[in-house]
Image 1 (spheres, rainbow, N blue to C red):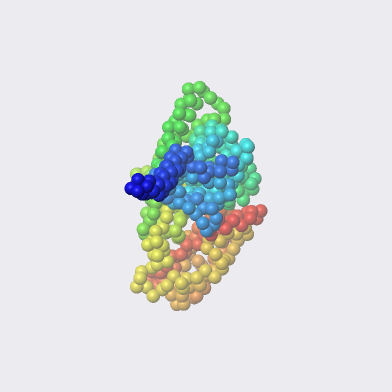
Image 2 (tube, one colour):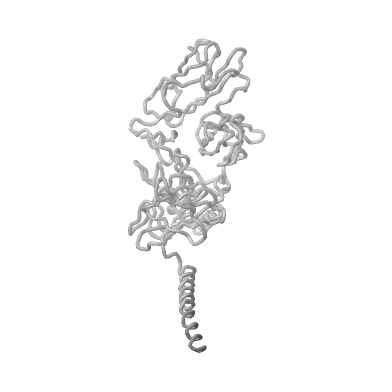
Length: 463
């Protein structure tokens, strides 16, 4: 009896434990397979890039649709397919790789994987900056204004600066560039910066937009972590040692440059609505420097130029500087980007003392309807309204309006290419309103982007 009971008890309790051990073994096998077998969710039959955040603090997202995006975590990487919407790096940095290319995406970069064929890939850079090292085949990187073709062995930096400028730096060998009108080969060690307004000029020669790479880019983290300066110097050494005279040449040695930034740094964040802009001048040939086509104060004594009280007009501010020699020839052109913090933007519309009864809402642009305004005509009449019995005279870019009636409520200004008050490209106007006793009441900024009649209005600065 006892033996029968024992056998019966053993029989009924052994079956559940057996299944528990079997189930545990299956789970262990699955865990090992996941740990050592790679990412099995990748569809290897479909074209893709492996996106990998490079620091634990990096915030990297793959957007599948306009309203849906997933953050990439871990170090194993996740696929970005051609049907996905985009990849964005909100903080830190990330890489995008396949068998043909290595792409370093800098902080604030947004990029789309457009297409893949047997001969290469197509990317679209919608925001900021990438480092592209081409291993095989060819990659075409589209920007707002140009397409950049990197062949096997090429290395380049491609930049899309706030919908205005598209830039390319040729780091290793010459880089092919295509626009809607031209094809161009950018020589090693040079950079080119192109806007839609540049392309709208039928008389433009792309060679006029080419400058040597200066140390402005050498302080960028993307350039440093990819040994950009070392690569450029090695190419210089090879060219010097071999006496090469072919297409792969080096034209500028870092850090030989004409202008060096003192403040503010590129892509820095300003906490005030007005900032001090300062650069040092590295060439005695430079006698004039402009910021957004407004003359700065150039000091031949300490080799600097300054602009105090530069007003920020939005969250993203492009400061275009141009340097000229004694003959009036433009010898350098570059763009510096400064972010306006929330605090700074709250103060932009309050450029008058808080005790003033005047509100910025009382200074209204009646026509045209937008600021900035993109146009193709050679002239335009800009109209404002101002508070009654308040404004005694108005200055536009240091020109006093002659036809404004003191204390009246409206005024106008003709921007005209024939009179020299407007030119092709970006035109910046600083309007200052003065009251009794030459008291500055309010300052307002207005921008006109003049494009060619043959160009499609880009609205590039209104986005």
